[in-house]
Image 1: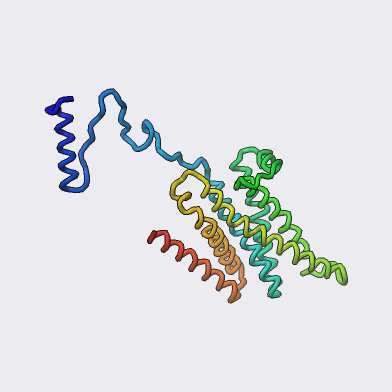
Image 2: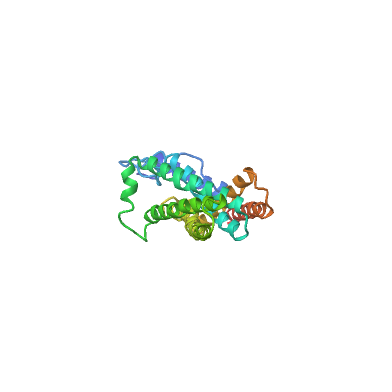
Length: 253
């Protein structure tokens, strides 16, 4: 390439434009013998591959988070003797967490036995493996908790057996609340461990975001179902405040 070549003149024009305007709007110079991709990436391919997930996974995030936090609300309702609220919250937890969520995961995997294969080995370093175990443990606690609570509420077995059902319901619901907290937040850890820059950069905030969103969704649904309780309303305001604070933090930083 000589100093009088068209490419050299074009480079000089680009340098002058960058010096005067601070930005280059002109077309670059192709390198002889080398392909120049017209789009960012490696030979025209994007630098970061798009997620392979379909619509089932975002819905699982929503239903799983809502189910987990519904169990947390149910445990609080048991402690403060709001049995009707606890019953409704556990129905939400069981339907969304023990029925809808596994179905969505199986639909995403394509074959039912693939979900069972994830339970063959316990990998504490794998967020996906931990998620399968957390979902299974949540369902194993939430369903018996709901059954025991319904039997106790309807006084099916009076006397000592009814007291045992009350204790069993409390134990199972509290256990479901523990696994529900993990169910609502592990998804943030899962997507934070990917190569998507925006997710990886905010990986410490994602579990908080997912858990708070699940809490707000569960509180809103329970209010829509008729439970006008001041504490439940306060949980909704709390979730909205935390989500707003996260949005401001992400916008500023």
